[in-house]
Image (cartoon, rainbow, N blue to C red; front, side, top):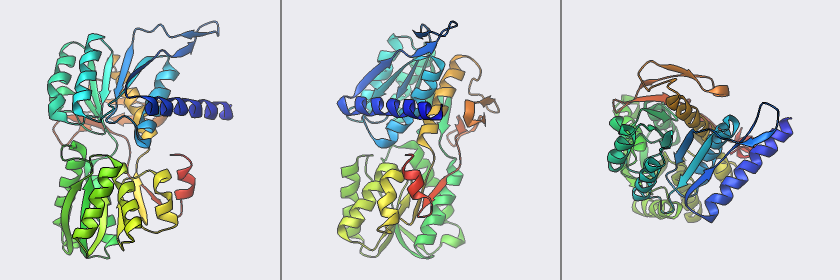
Length: 354
């Protein structure tokens, strides 16, 4: 039974990866479910859920999509996954407008620019379509709930402690973030700056905040520039999976004596942890679980099981129970988990998972 479920999950991920490689845009799925007599039928549910990713294809986004798809498939729901081929907010705006015309049940989105999407998402909600954002918050007025992978305070303290450790208590470091309009990363960085004011971090010198725009090559070139501009640099902290992998590759290629840490995927960071020691350890949440929780929230919002009001509680299948809490921007959020540390002691096993 376990083997069959594992085979099914692998096939689903392969289909998602193939879709990502072949094209951007939106792909609709009519799922299959068991009817009362045990036969398999195409779902006739009127419910239709949408996941709008920030980019056309990345390992991380594919895992989020896998988690979302698995819950929709399990529930026999119709769903659509949209992938911006250029990773732009203009494409996301186009997808939101088109889905409004189709009168879908709920739109879940990782906004590339929350302010730019505010008008479209607000209009969607005014037309009776539920809206939630995941990982990156939409503006509070244009979402019902945010699904956050981690709480900002925990992120800030975890990353700052890592920088302090890898710098040996003192030294120069930089941040390589995704983009200047990435709301979650900006919130994390603001909290990190606040933590830096504490006495324990007084001997750390933050030199620059650079942006790789969640594109590997851009982040790679940014890292090369940072390494050339700051000869005494000791640590690069990248709170983005694409940025961390790119930073580690650039450090390796230039032979720099610099450590990297941040948020990454075990499968992408394994060599930098085990062989090169460029990244002694890093952190992340489970992106597949993030996609699953986003699916559960989407279904709960449409079914009026929750409304996104502060203090509400809900169950998300095997993921467990969650509570709606206040987010940094004044809206509400549900937090997936705490940061999980990956290092030489566990990287090999986790690299086989994601």
